[in-house]
Image 1 (cartoon, rainbow, N blue to C red):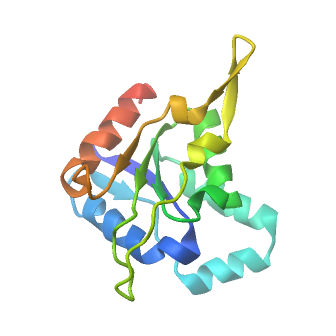
Image 2 (image 1 turned 180 degrees about the vertical axis):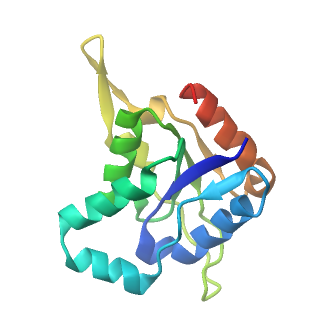
Length: 163
């Protein structure tokens, strides 16, 4: 069965790296992802304000059963990645992360490891805070052979969410 995946990431820093990962998934028979936004389109949406950005994100997430957070240097500080994580959790999507440090960008520069954005969000369970990083797994694209395993990670996340 084809899985539609929403890829969440810090656009400015990681667009090039993310495109490599996204394309490795979309090129498989089971892979589908939301349309990719180019810089000009993203800038137009940003100019319309926060509500327009949220509406665009909400629209792109429709029909996606899984959200994959691609974690670069500044991903954890991104307001919009935070929104996407929170929305994915609240909506019951499968959710997981992939560290993308070590991958080259368009200038042949390797990214450095960022912090886990799931650490920024928590739920209350039995009166105690539980970080989303305790719930959702995070893999490493290079060290965990992401090109071969991304399909398995997506399926695992989908099953964990009952999708």
